[in-house]
Each structure stands twice: as C-alpha cells, then as structure tokens.
Image (cartoon, rainbow, N blue to C red; front, top):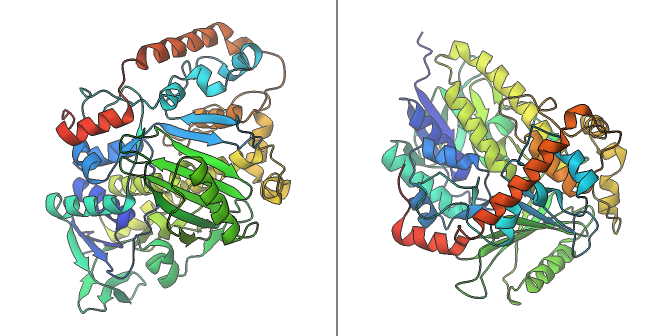
Length: 509
C-alpha cells in the first residue's frame, strides 16, 4: 500500500487558507488543492501583521510593490496603547517592533528606573516610537523590497489580501482552486479523512487535509469533535464592532502603528490604510451591551476626526479559546479553525504563518511518519497559544483602571494564569530575559514583555546587581537618541513613501 503524501487539500480560503496553500506550494513539489465555499464570507478584520509577514511573502515569491498596490497596504511599526494604565489622556506607551538598544547587554529597565523614570521606557531605549509619533516610514524609496531601515510589518485590507494571495497561488504557484461547498466528509477504514464530497457535485480526495474553514472548524472541530479549550475566564472579550472610516482629506497622515485605546469595557483598534481607516471596538458582552459599545465607538471616531454619519458597524462574535490539539490523524487546523482569542497584538495572522511554515518545513513524507510530526506540532502550538494568552493578559493585569468591573475583574487572581503569576513574581527582581522564553521561535520575545511591563509602570525591586552594567545601559540610551536624531529627517512620511511605491515600486532584491 502506497502511503506517500502526494496531495494536500486546504479547506477554506481567506488569508489563512491562501497563505497556507502558498507556503506549501512554494516549498514542495506536491499537488495542492484549495476548496473554497462561495457561501462563506471572509471575516476580513485581521488587518495587522507582524514583521514575519515580510519573510512569508518573500518565501512565496510575492512582489512587495504589488502587495502594497493591490492590498491597500501600509507600514506597521508596532502598537500604541492609549489609556490602558490610568485612563488619563496622557496615558500612552508604545510596543515597537525594534529591539531595545543594548538589549541583552545590560539591565536597561533598572537603569531607566533609577536615572530616567520621567521618560517612557520605549522612548528611551528605541528610536521607533519617535518614528511613529512623526509618522515616518521604516525605509526609504531606494531601499529594496522587504528590507528596512527599521523593522516593520503591515496594515492591509484583509479582503483584498485574500484575493491577491489567491491570484498569486493559482497563477504563479499552480495551486488548484475548487469552488464548492463541502457537503460531506468521507473517511477511510482507519478513521482518516479520505475525501470531501461537494454539494455542487464532485469528490476531492487527498492525503493530508488542512482545515482553514474558520470558526466553524469543519474538519477538526465538527468532524473529529476536537474540543475548544475556552478562555473567557482569562480574557473576557467575545464581541467586536468593526467599521471602515474615510480620511478627512486625501493627503491625511497615515498612522505608522496600530493604536489601541482602552474603553470602559474593552478597547478600540485604529488601523491606517492609504485609502481609509479600519476601526473597531472589542468588548465583553458580559460587561457591555452592543448599544453601549457602539456609542463608545462612535464617540471615538468623532473625537479622532472621523465623520458623524458612519454606517452601522459590523457585529462579530467569537468564543475565545483554542483546540485541545491542532493536528488529529491526517487533519491539521490552521487559522480560526484552530482557535481565536482577541485581536490585541495581532497574533492571529502570525499564528497562521507559524503554522504554515512549520507544516512546510516538517512535512511528513508518508502517512506512517505523520503521527510523530503531529505530536511535535501539537506540543509546540499548545505552548504558543499559552504564551499568547499570558502576554495578552499582561496588558490587563498591569492596568490600574478601576472605573468598571471589567478592569477590576481582570486583576482578580482567579482570572490570572498561574504561570503568569509566577513570572510576575520573578520579574520583581529582574527583567524578563531569554531564560524565561527559551524557544527558538517564541511568539513574543522577552523584549516585547519588557515593553509592556515598563510601558505600564511595572517596577523592579531590590538592590542593583554587578551584572546590570549601568555604563552599557547609558551607552544604549545615547545610541537610541543618536539614531532617532539621524533617522527622523532622513525618512519620508508613510504617505509619501506609499505614494511613491504605487507610482514607481521599490527596487527588487
């Protein structure tokens, strides 16, 4: 019996399905078929990426210039958090994509706390928050595609992104695109999925099936009954209202970061694209009504220069959680079918990239080898989901807001994972380090935890250590200031560079 893996079937389109199909088709000389239902709309809210998306797009052979033009894309250099700590108007801090200057060489947090506590931590150790405040691009017009002076990801139109990836996968990578609704799943005698029966007629057989069917989790959740591990007791948000907002003028500045503004019972994202802003309110239905959430959303839009007559927001509901395993038999779930928590810190697309990359790099040659790969995949991604939950919860645990039950309940010990409580105790004595996150591909490196901790006012306790090297920390602070002074006048604005890319493109690598 031939059990060689020769045909991979991806179930579901959108960003998750087409990214996965693209990575697999670019890496392996296998047949890749994507089955996409015409009746299932793309959710299309995940408009922010991590810098890893640059490597993913380059890996599948995409032109970055074409990507900017066709996906209404813009640069993202990190996240800005407003009103998360105290709720005051001047309560602002950044989580930039660039590592702190001197990271790993000295105790930057200790030196900052002792000598510069009046300066926001990220502003002291990194030039990137200053680029964001001034709306600067992370590269120049002469910088080649996918390269950057500063580290960057993207903001994009998720609907256009799916179409862009589809066309590239079909026309450049040879992915077979089948439009049809999965009506039944046929199984082999051993319990594996053998084929998909389509409502429109036809059978799609395969050796390995990738479930990118969204929150319905057609194969892993429905067919195999793999349970969702609910996380609403840790992270309360389960609803969102999303709307597209035009700029006041065609030449309005384009934000260089995702802005997350805390609200009484959730937070509002604000993402700048060349042609519009994507704005949405994420909230907990246990703490807020839809009407109250929409009132806060409309007030935010009006206060930030948006029009008063916005259309009715699109309502999205979700159950925060992740599957107890992601690869079962010959089915692996990627994207929303594997789980979803909330869009804070834009981890959803990053998990798609990590999952697709792992599958491509560890693709089993035969069915007999699949269970070993599946066990490794399940262990790795359970770890990643747990780290994401801890990291997102950190934003809420450190808040000092007490204006609503939403914020005070986030700080109750019963809602804080024990693993996060233990880390916070360790970090009273020293900053987060690579010892705390030792895997090669950590979802959030220790530097990201430092940006959140010290951006939200977390304090170190105890006497200085010999290994703190305050002299090196001071050198790092000076270097960050020097780079800021050099970069600000040398880099164009986001809109200037994006206009140039649309007209002329970027140099190819």
